[in-house]
Length: 426
Figure (cartoon, rainbow, N blue to C red):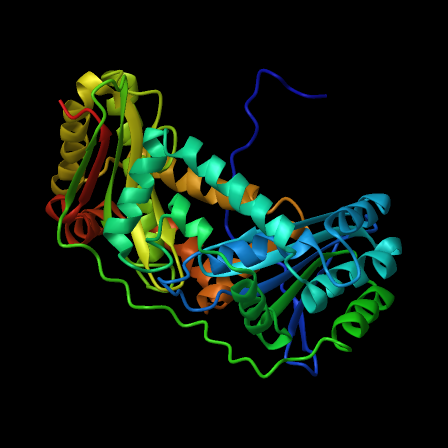
């Protein structure tokens, strides 16, 4: 019988076991990783492509080509593609990221013979119809017009531009950039990027031999590399010299604050340790920034800090929206909290809470086979092995307040922060 008057036994997290994939490589150079687990007759298949080198004269090609993959092929128009996928109860989406773009299919195993050919057709016969391109341009311009009215969106764009410079990470589209999209450019980009040798397939779900054989047969035959060169390198990141940016909006009731600095990414050995430090600062609801600026001062509904880990860069950032009349005071309090981390040891009780939060979050994020595949993607595209998570958990369990004090002084230099304000600064 459940004893409701007694708290359940508390146990520390010792070791987190992650599923590891089986690996094969197709004759056309495409790499395949399989996570076979679960009872449901369902699979998630991701085709992930490295983005081509950023071209400032044609900055939207990576995003536009990925977004328009499903807008028509030589054999099917957009409606036919969507109807076929829907008929079999499947789900197909294309997603663009800074470093990679991907196409994801969720499908019942029994319908793969009907859904996989649709995906293959997209990778081999996409045509980017002129009418759909016009619609895409018009829709994106309208979305951009709405987005640029939001202070937090403008702050994020200005921050990225300052920190990442003229790279794919720092680019913020303007309306005229969409006008420059041309059918011929999209087609050439597509033929260069969506080649099997630039693709990694990650399969997760119940994968029987027949299922894997079908996937391999579909994408190892009739999908060939072209003679178009694949260049997935990126220009070097060069942060701006100016560190303070104010976009004034005299009628603003709230001001958006975004500040931070270039930092290490996941491939650096200090990354797990700095993640602990970031969590103390602003990485969860009980963080110091939340306790001070939300709970104590009442300047905002929410504030947080985070670490972005990209293939060629990394940042620490702090983001919030505050009442316009307290914007300068909120920035002062942010500086104050960073200064305290550099001068005072984190109390053991607070550090213990943060450690339990981080370990619990990691454990809670592994709820199914798809979650395990997602963890693998993080490692794979960062060039890391599973040893990373062993080291990550060990760092969280053993790091001390003294070590975090040293890290704060090593990495947190408020004078080097890029400070972006959109609204009023008073």
